[in-house]
Length: 302
Image (cartoon, rainbow, N blue to C red; front, side, top):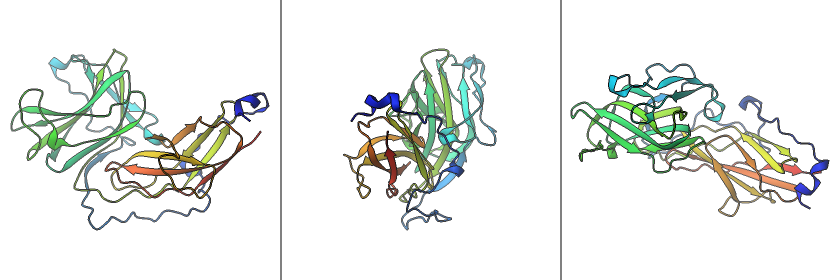
């Protein structure tokens, strides 16, 4: 029987958003190791990280006369996965762009820039850095832009190039980092969180998801899932959510029901009452996938 046919009998459980510390271990799971062990061939090293929970120190819009009106930078709560704060930028400038800037030195070769962003009313996201020796800004454009949802993106500075000219970031040293959105209106906003400049090769997968919970929203016919993001050396990029009617299933393309950079998900694809099992797979900025979590059991009853 369809869930929607019995909506008059249902009581919705929609006020569901627990703090990470309140989420229980998934049945059969245990506490994570204190430290995530790197694989022998892993050479990844963090050069600089900003998560904006404590401060925005060093970050601001580029306050040059030709860039007026200057974009406004301020903290915004919450950030990605309910972190304390994100960096919010508003007020598009002269070239209909907005974004924060920081002075920081990093090599172009073998370096990666990973960041989480969420835009409102934008059409693209771009990272850029200044090369002092050639007095040019080199740019890299996100190949998979999404507006209106948290997305984790990794760009390679060695491939960045100027708007005019053929210089590349490889074998050069950058002096700044700016991440900006292409605005579609004066109301466009950009949120940034967990910005990481790192080098080397990341071959170590994230730890698996160990804590999670679910509530049934019978009024909408949905299951609302929430979990705690596991540890990773660099950054978690996304989570795959898998569903089955068997607890012992192996996640695959047929069981995949969605993915998200967030740590919550609403499954609106249920048609019948019964018992469902969910598993989560974390993927990091280098596309390393974690082991699947233990199965989270959810009973959907009248």
